[in-house]
Length: 148
Image (cartoon, rainbow, N blue to C red; front, side, top):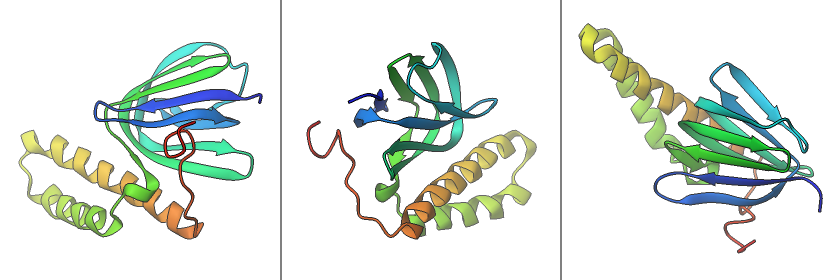
């Protein structure tokens, strides 16, 4: 099989390891699209949505910082925090978003940055959770669930 070997790890766990056709990741300077034979690079990741495509299937992850190492046939994501779309509790993420919005106007300047981080994190989690729900899919994540 041609493609890229993708590995996504966080300090807590390995979230994915397997072959993919393309990786779309949140770089600090914008969205990165990685195809096989991409030039080697190391980049810092922003908070955002990472998408791994295998044929017509798409697998989504919420990424909250970290680094990505790209080689011509491999992508390694070392995330500060990462979650699979199916593991995100959308109701809890929405409560966190509402709480952060409420605190944003009340936070003293020295605490405002932390509140903004919490708000961004909850927004990313909601975006990824809602995307999975719109697709009405119950896909397992190959490479983790099936031992690939």
